Image 1 (tube, rainbow, N blue to C red):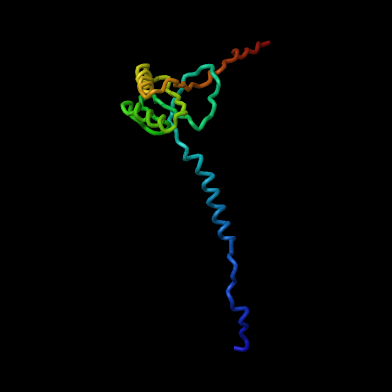
Image 2: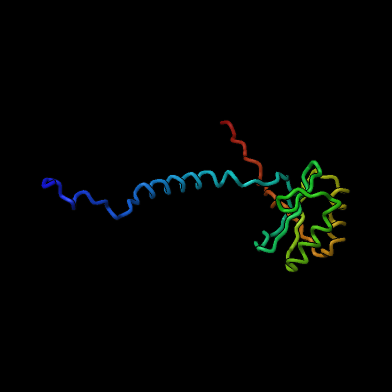
Amino acid sequence: MAGVNSSKSRFMGEINVVPLVDVMLVLLIIFMVTAPMMVQGVEVRLPETESGALKHSDELLVLTVTRQGKLFLDEFDVSIEGLADKLRNIRSRKPGTRVYLRADKDVPYGVVVRVLAEARKAGIDDLGMVTEPETVKGPPPKKKEAK
């Protein structure tokens, strides 16, 4: 026992954080790469008009009507029959919520009118319409003359 030093056989009382930092950096990179892929939306071709951009607000609710006539309240699928009740419940919880209608340009007019009637039934008098900015077409390119 004379050759064994008792101070060398003690355990180290510090935490080694290098493996922890390595794991956290790998997780951070994984989340940074996959987060943009997780965003889902409803594909809608909007009509084009000349109008200003929407002011972004937390109190914003978007009704979307797809080309197939499916109705979404933000990203959640809803039926047209239950739309008025859902809108009424949301407006009672958050009275300042603004509602916008986003309908595909190929949706029949009757479907859009029916959605507007359900929103009106829910007590929404001020319903905004979402459109795409109109594309500006420049003059046709000039042809080069052959000499």
